[in-house]
Amino acid sequence: MKIVDASTRIVEVPLSKPITTALHDMASVGCVLLTLRTNDGVEGEAYAFTLNSARIKAFDEMITGLVELAIGRDPHDTEGIWHDVWREINPTGHKGVTIAALSTIDVACWDIVGRAAGLPLHKIFGACRSSVATYASSGLWLSQPIDELVAVAQDFVDQGFRAMKLRIGNPRIAADVERVRVVREAIGDDIELLVDANQGLTVKHAIRLARQLEPFDLTWFEEPVATHDRVGCAEVRSATDIPIATGETEYTRYGMLDLLDARAVDVLMPDLQRIGGYSEFRKAAALAAAFDKPVSTHIFTEQSLAIAGSTHNCISVEHMDWFAPLFNEEMELRNGELVIPDRPGTGFTFRK
Image (cartoon, rainbow, N blue to C red; front, side, top):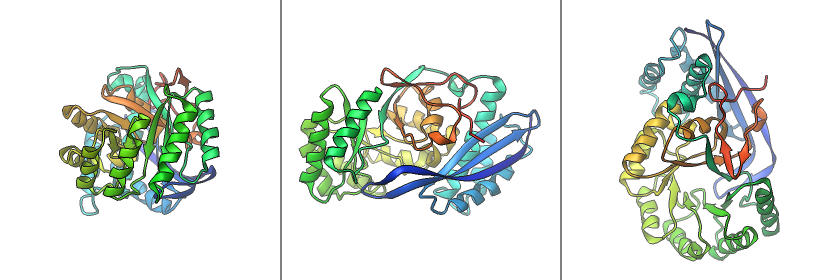
């Protein structure tokens, strides 16, 4: 089996309404959809994305340029292809658009492997579960007023979610405390509540806020400070009993190692696009396991289920519905968990 052809397609997926975090204003996501084809007629698919479609053409050009290293290769040679791309991007750098392209190529190759075998990827990787905990993340934005937060939180509960994430990051600590209090009262004590500051706080602000949020039994406090401030994140972690989750904006196993070495994290959150695809995600998860730390996947919900189903220290996946319009298949929520699909490959195929 050989990869004989590759094609990309750029699409923009509008969000239902503009949303805001402490770091971003978002109205859409732009995606590059990659399809690899083999001489046996088996296809593999993957995508990269940017917020608001900003600079999405640069992602397309990087993927198109680097995918040439996979043409003529057996898609089962995932490790060899990965390292050939890794070597090729050395002069450009091992972060940013280059890693996004590497990730997309890697996921598409693995998708072929699964489809060719007629097996879901979590079975090929070595399955450990058939469903995984998830939390609703497509709402409870910083831009939403409190009355809307209550309605959205109740809707998540009605959909069957047993956990949800609230964005915080107001200049006034009291405003964030009030938002958390109101949502906690609305959902009760049996629903998990997570908060995410999206890197929007200073260390001292984050510590003061965390101490005031401790009575609300939060599952974690995500990205309290800038991702590069590992010392600051470690200070926040040491000052609160709330677990600290971070890592979504770090790249490859080396970024994960930096966070672990700095003692800056309780829950590591690799992002499939930034981590380096399935091949590197599995290494990062093993690295976290060596530190006795859990991982929780960031966005890319559909594709991340293959990791969750084969990674024992994966405690949850983020349920983000932004990319659902891309796919023919739908995710299945059952008893508060997402079902790991038993369809071949990633289990999801692009709408044409």
